[in-house]
Amino acid sequence: MRVIHTVAALRDALAGATTTALIPTMGNLHAGHIALVEQIRTHGQPLVASIFVNPLQFGAGEDFQRYPRTLAADCERLEAAGCDIVFAPDADEMYPEPQTFQVLPPLADELCGAFRPGHFAGVATVVLKLFNMVRPATAIFGKKDYQQLFVLKGMTRQFNLPIRILEAETTRAADGLALSSRNGYLSAAEREEAPRLYRLLQRAAARIAAGERDFAAIERAAADELGAHGWRLDYFSTRDRRTLLPPAREAGELAILAAAHLGNTRLIDNIEVARG
Image 1 (cartoon, rainbow, N blue to C red):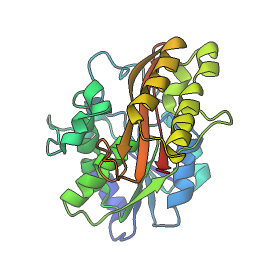
Image 2: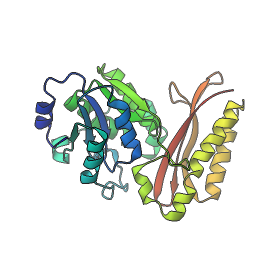
Image 3: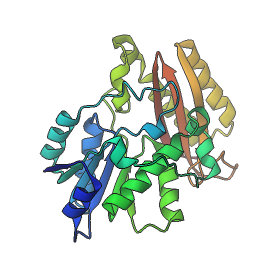
Image 4: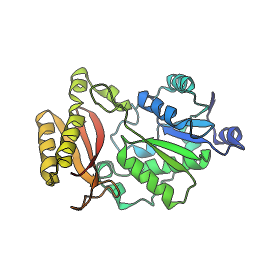
């Protein structure tokens, strides 16, 4: 496996490749990332994993400075999983001059976008640059970041990029907690409490699948329970899977998305559900 730090060296390494596959990451890899490797490696070669902690997607007061940077350990895990190239640029290589990608749908300002202004502009900017640098035939993103996946699929369509986007199911711990690099911020007591978010998503999905239509009441019940157990809720929201907008009564394919703070850690999760 090669570890590459510059765009010029990356393009040299990929010269002539037509089926390159890409996994964009910010490093500090866990089993969920390795599951992405296992899913995508049959869809193209060489397989490139990028590791770059992207400053543009962190807002003021967020955890950019303390976000874990574990390049050596990440490279070991990726090599063992069958990755061919790790692209690990520094900020000057990725952003030789200031820039952000601004052509985003209004949806980018809802849900996580409402609480993290500019976040999706930063995500779209770095991914579009990676797409131009790697020129993959296939790229993969996990469903845990459900709104991010939606925005990036829309960006790919908008620019008519010849890239197939694969979706990976969320990898979870045995107790249901979605794996995330930020889980390491949780104290022991918070880690024990953290699976409640997914349990409430499952409960809400079961009520909708059973035929309930009062989404607001279902969402309030979840918000009340989270508040009673010390969480600070950003949102718990039922959306139409096709648009990620609030659903019409006839919408059948739904997703419930949630973001909440437990102590100093912001956790996100979601679940898909078909209305009964």
